Length: 112
Image 1 (spheres, rainbow, N blue to C red):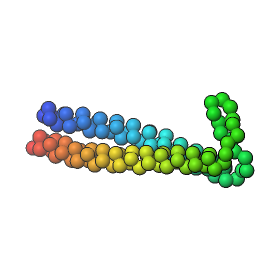
Image 2: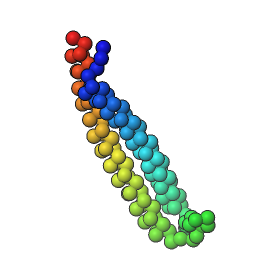
Image 3: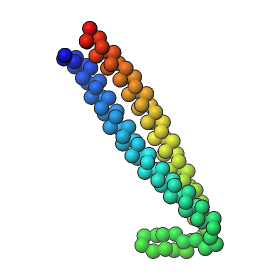
Image 4: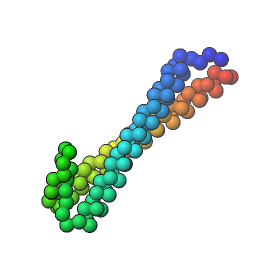
């Protein structure tokens, strides 16, 4: 059975979508790790009176409130990136499902 060129192109696109979704999953996992790290740092910061910030290879005494603000800002940014990636992932998944239906329909028609 020989598939039409258009169907073959759609299959290639499906493979690209799958690769993109895998890339999104890895990136999202990295951002989620960062989010856990920031949450952990914020929780630890609540327990101490004196705070330090790592700058390069040294630790510098830092104002606790400023540090909390910086961490909260980083948390917000990472959360926003995760939500944006989830939207992109959903859109790509929808495109992939639609294209998959088209390809399966074309393959069934070619078999007749």
